[in-house]
Picture 1: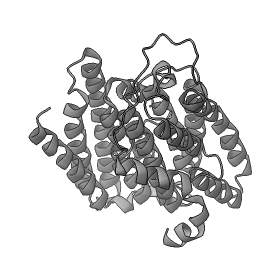
Picture 2: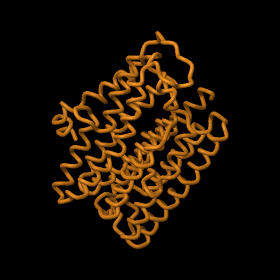
Picture 3: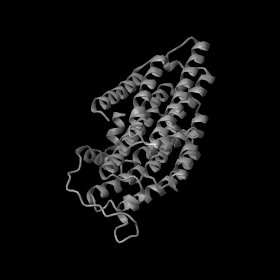
Picture 4: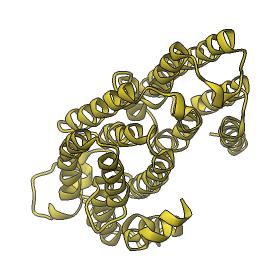
Length: 346
């Protein structure tokens, strides 16, 4: 793609995200979401492959439906209360419609079907944008409306998302689809706590974005898209593969890595809110996703030759590792010891 065009699309993405996050009025938030949707479509379909075009079409249709629901919810609220302010969403029907719209935008169960397909049809860099930056405006809207939302509905959506995100990722061989189901599972953790402690949701999102960015950029460096290719990637960049192993375990939420921090805090907060059953259930369901993270980690670093994959050996590259990947990997692995400092900031 033309560098100027790419620059325009990336700038539009940042603009749309900023407008939605900083707006008080529903129409401005909706405008930001629309700018975001239109800016990401060319980035999804830039390869001109039928699968990429299909992914862009699916993405456009679901996001357009979700945006229409956001508009409908805000208009219903304005009709009943006379308020267009985002924080003044008080009408129960509006809250219900908005929760459905945001769930559709994020890819929460039962509106998750589009997300793995779109991620599978996109390049790795666009997949990273879809998994991180594109999730920020809807989460910001949830954050602003969190006092009015229905806790029972969000808890149900969260537990279903964690269950299906772990369960449907078990049988996948395409890494982008595995990461899509991983994203759905993590969104479940964010949704369950948004009503009780919204700042914890934001912390979880930031850490998830850093860990996912590490994994996507590492896979983009080694040009890996399938499990079978991942098995032969060790010879290409051994140190990078080792870091990928640790990043995957961090995303799975294993101590003493960074990914354990948000899960630990969320379980603690749920227990304080007398939701020990929900905390136990969501913790047990996250073991499903732990299985496919371990499978990825196993393919990354533990299946060393000789093994039976029908792939050509890849030459070891002398290219230095990107500084961005180095910084992100450090954050992904080593943030747990400074948890008290992070909590004082949050």
